[in-house]
Image 1 (cartoon, rainbow, N blue to C red):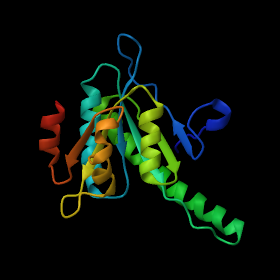
Image 2: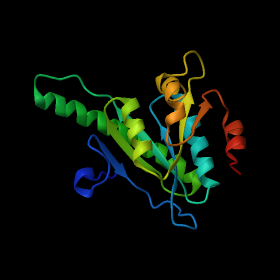
Image 3: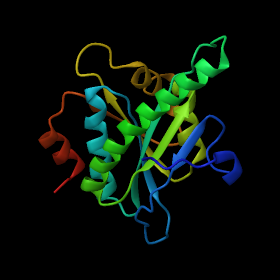
Length: 186
């Protein structure tokens, strides 16, 4: 089960988010170097996750942050129904992230940091990369066919020149072997 913290009490993630930090491997200076991967239930996000884990493995202090953004729910007149819907969505996200975290640890040898946020995806991704100076790269996956996706379009567009870190866009059609080769996974 994904461990959840109370971000407001701990002074951690901003409102709307929660996090679980793995110990990670520290660099010589003790500073983590984090690769943020935005995940969902699309096949291409696994390619981006594999790439990020490979890069983290070959980076002193490398760590993977797996970010899942729950969309904001429309207002439901009965608060109890909305609470149940939110809880079910969070439980589904936790189950997905647990599986992804196992994959990351197998590749890079350190636990992933899990972030579950609720709100607009673009806003939440921006908050994660701007609020943590340890983030060295945002890694997104482009859809294998058709439109690359809204996050890829946004973060590679007009805002790209003002981001606090580089963005890597991994093609969703890459094979595990090709991904391993560019990520330098042995």
